[in-house]
Length: 292
Image (cartoon, rainbow, N blue to C red; front, side, top):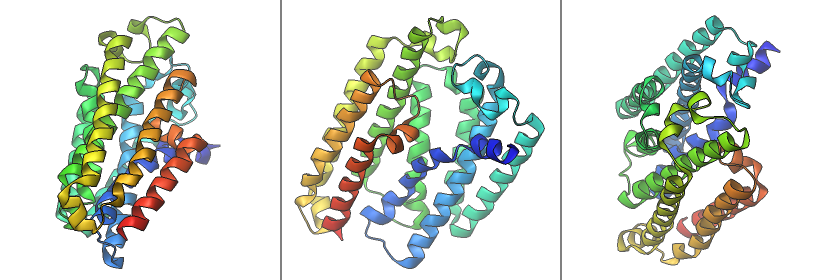
């Protein structure tokens, strides 16, 4: 039971987020064995460091998580894993991540260290600042992309950075929307439940943020597919045909958020919903086939 609880503590289902480090090699045409190996090392490094950050956040939020209808079942608030053991695992994961990243490049090491620094600040105070809390989450994804580009000596595409920024903002505000819906469903006051920052959010405001970020995600990706730089790099103007799958994916996520009470855990939603899984796989196949 302890091994299972430790694995749950590290939240391995969240590792799908670390696939953002592969954006650089895929869209930059850096498909050599050496680059892919380094990208894999960075991916594993982010898995370790993300788990260490999750444990740190759980240690900070152990009391508030105990009152959450879902989070109270996590290993720390439920008492399945002691705080002492959690701290030891956290330190080992962090040390392993930094050591592994240093093998790849100092730039990658810098981005991983910056990821840790920002997330520590997030756990301690920034998560309670409205809007900035979601921006910090988005920055974490951007650091993954930068680690998989600059960290591998791959020039990052401004369009892809912009697309990544907007889609992660969308997912961040979707998470806040789901949490607001949960407070209504459980009939708890926002002051006494899951996140203090929810006191500063309203359903109407979050809906506006979602609409803006969703529209920006679709527009940015569409402009990326038809930009002269993209056509020159990939040697094709056909990437525009992958746009419908991006639009469908965004709309499907809206549906899950509004009708299936999803959105609280983007990583779990992306791998649990068959529509999203199939859409992402088809989109990835089309993109790789067109730019190969």
